[in-house]
Length: 264
Ligand code: NAD
Image (cartoon, rainbow, N blue to C red):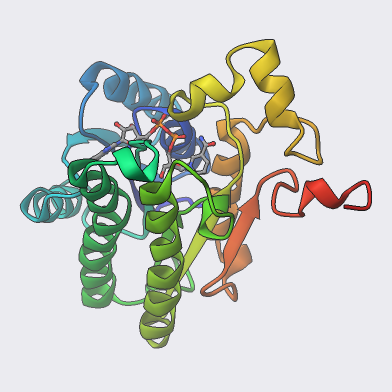
């Protein structure tokens, strides 16, 4: 579905980013596997992708560092010639009640989750505009997929930095989509619900925790990273060429106000 396309996935050595990088490779794309720590995990992802007969390289960069993001884009173009798909996925949590949240905790989450996506999207957009549409490759000049969260709409006590970062991702994504659509660049987002990854291990690791979590999920299963990866492949493909500026919620119905299922 993505044969001949070049993709960059940030935070691709773990969880959703890892599954997405692998799924893009399986769909025929060459993939840059970004990581900031955990080189061995990134190399294992590269190996798995290469087994599909496409190319993959690991690249270390902190997405919140302007110079490192620019260097990562240069490396991408050097290795693959250009870029067609950016999945701005890297993200983290630094949780605390608001009265105990330090400025450093607030700033770190905004720097990685929001500024990191801005820096990667900006560099990708420059490359997409430099190259333009290549009809044999894709109808679009480029696709940007921002990894948001159900917390772009669901407030989350004890996580004000994270919820604010994802609310910011929504408006950044929609504004970039509006600005870049005339250049034939499609910008969209995926909002995962509860997906089984290291970021939220406490929420699903024990049977009691999982039971609690399932009360929030009408579809009654915790999501797998592949659920998000498949959505990313679909959004990146020309099957979704008319989808611009949309957030695709992949959440088992978490945003359907499950508390009201029994009448409220
Ligand atoms: P994860 O912890 O497994 O993966 C996060 C990745 O981001 C890791 O590879 C980490 O090293 C990387 N990262 C962190 N800071 C970075 C930086 N400065 N530069 C580059 N990479 C950096 O967690 P995950 O669940 O796979 O999270 C991926 C994305 O999905 C995040 O944006 C997260 O907010 C979002 N998300 C996850 C869930 C969920 O339930 N797991 C739900 C909604 C949204």
